[in-house]
Image 1 (cartoon, rainbow, N blue to C red):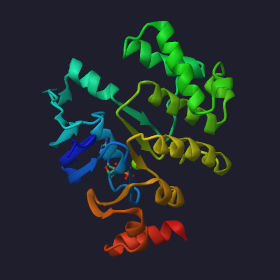
Image 2 (tube, rainbow, N blue to C red):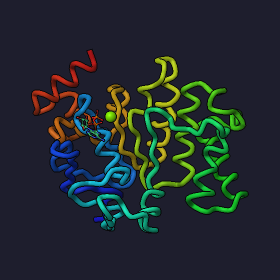
Image 3 (tube, helix red, strand yellow):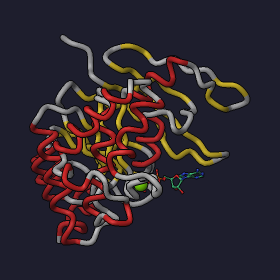
Length: 253
Ligand code: ADP
Ligand code: MG
């Protein structure tokens, strides 16, 4: 059997005395979309942030394509090794708040990590960036600044930036939660197209219809643990957990 594209085993995360993640194990095969659902504060963002080492896990192991990811700590901070940079660059992250650089155009936003992190030559970076902007349907707006783009367009630019690094896994943390309702669909359509194109994704969303359609598997988080895990039909239609049933019904009705 081929190795999982990404996996985490026994992940714990504490802030001081408070344990936010209490032993999470999760794996995605290549091309799978795993959606994380759960109420606010259940640990979904912390899980994604530990996966790409924006946060230091308190315990547990990360694997990318079956390789265990080694990271070093000095005084509780991650040491910026080459391995860590490579690992981070193999995961594309999209945040709720877009996180575009305001003083750069869309294409400059997409090109910047290619030049500064991947160290690509400018011409190659530009070619890749334009390709990614095509993919998200934003090529005609490539020279616009974030302030000249709608929220949906800004988020599509952020997706293009994540895509252009050609990541092994895409991580999305509530990519449509900051958008006006009429702009949600254009972003969900882009994510759906990427999923259909075979991208491996971990996705936090409150868009339950979308989650049901796009997910290979769904994980319901509750107080730092995976309380329910399975096919979308099962998690949404016939969950074993009472709390999962209540959450799903509260958010879909
Ligand atoms: P979710 O994304 O599911 O809403 P989070 O992962 O953001 O949940 O948060 C899980 C819990 O961890 C919350 O109780 C939150 O207050 C706490 N938490 C998150 N980040 C920090 C931090 N940097 N310091 C202390 N507590 C934090
Ligand atoms: Mg969150």
